[in-house]
Length: 69
Length: 137
Image (cartoon, one colour):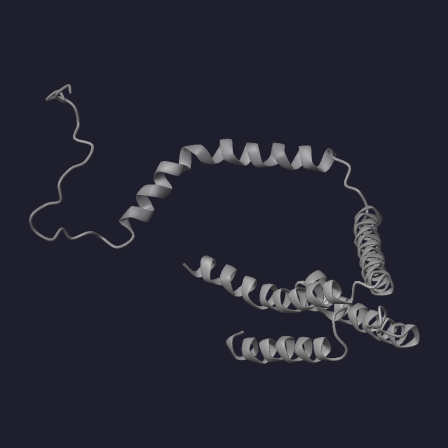
């Protein structure tokens, strides 16, 4: 079995994308008053499913809160 | 408990049996007449307070602008420090994952990743709702 199944350039690409995504989520969550640290850490895990989950959750919550305000 | 003496005035008189007719505005007149002796003393107190306040040096708008500017600069600095801390944590995390993968710990990394990927969304999504529930209770 290969000890290192993940190639370095592929990992670098993933790392750059995940880092950018996490940073954007961190800033956006802070702006919206969400738990920005946890959302940012979630953004580091996957590309782009974390971003999709974040957008769905935060935008859905916003739509839900609007009529009540 | 001591019994009230007979000559003492009843402080809490019972209401009369029949509906008592009261002149409209009689209470107000009574109150004004009761306050009339206090008026000169209150006026003197007001004048004295005004004199004291006039003697105090009020800082100009620049002072308050400075306070606001200082607070904003502090908040900006704190936000920048927080963002830099997050960047450092993110880089450390990604470097750590890379290091573990290079060292051949593919399975532990995969298991750890799976656990984090499962628990983190759970914490993010359900902890605030639980808190809201506690508050509403």
